[in-house]
Image (spheres, chains in turn orange, cyan):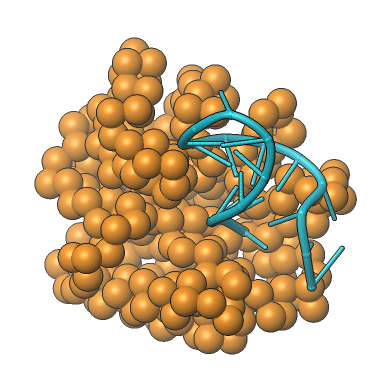
Length: 260
DNA sequence: ATGCCGGGCGAAGCCCGA
């Protein structure tokens, strides 16, 4: 089954591209981030017409995540466990189905964390600690598990154009990378890196300064797999071509295939 | 380094992103 993650930067502003992408790439499951709408504003009818079931965890104006699946979506959890008072819609988890197996998936929009000297950076680190705790708990179930989304983490210097530019940024600070590596080291596999070793492959390019044309990007969208999912991993690729479109998101989809 | 872009909100200009 093909599972894709895509930070769409507003599902309403991006609707034509998202529909075109769903028709072209035809993922079995799509994990969306930054839908930037409340649940009632999600363009359900248009996406259901393409054969998808939909589960959303929306919010007015900011954030918001969703799961689309050709097969049923069950056991939906909205919000990252660990802080019931957190108002930001950045996490949705559910069971979806491949031909052979159920798969637990999460669509993750991890906080950016800039500026680092504001309350936003501790919020990011705290959110990452909550994600680590939750992932540890999920891994005990030994399920086929895919935690994918916009992690807002540049894992290594080879995942950006110029590490000096990012040295003091919340996406690349040592504390940020350490938290990400703690998460991965629970026993998760970075699907893209398991399939592709070539450095400087990016999933995000800023709208400003001709960043895409200069290939000044960063790899911050990731799919992390439990051992049971990693055993089934067939491929992982970045769909760079969607960044070249008119009205493109600043992120592109990451597509993985697992034999589930 | 920032706010050069782009979206939301709401009807100008600010907040936010990475």
